[in-house]
Length: 186
Figure: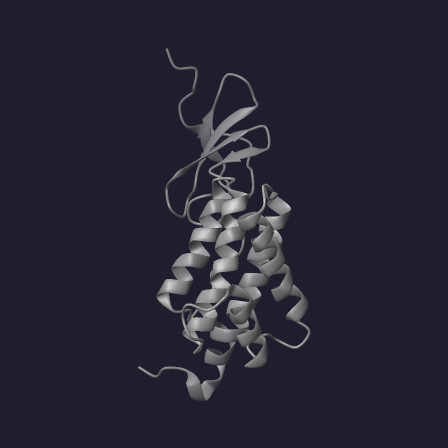
């Protein structure tokens, strides 16, 4: 016998859908016999988001979509974001480290180099924004820690690296395409 009640109007809750990333505030859902478990159906993608107190499943992805990123790099960035949705924060940090290598190769660095050479390539060729060398080094250092040491990364570590990776992708790929002369015309 189920203890979930039929769909009904429940107290509204504003949240970010763990599936589509939309910020929503549905007022209809399912409520368990206690008030600590609820299922809200996202009005954007029609998928269920489960809440037990303030814990949400699936967890919303960290970071935001970035435009005009080459498919392989975008897939890796989204993989890092998806790791956060599964609370796989160490894997997210390692993916962010790998993003640096992929960007460097996409921008002309030779494959098969040492990782530090890719970071240096990005810096030497001005793909790191002014004042951004420290955060690129932070991605490298945290990624190295996750990759080469017995260390688990936290949600805050993953959030930092995804945020920094997002900004780097915006600086290199998205923002230049916003210049009117570079926009594709239909």
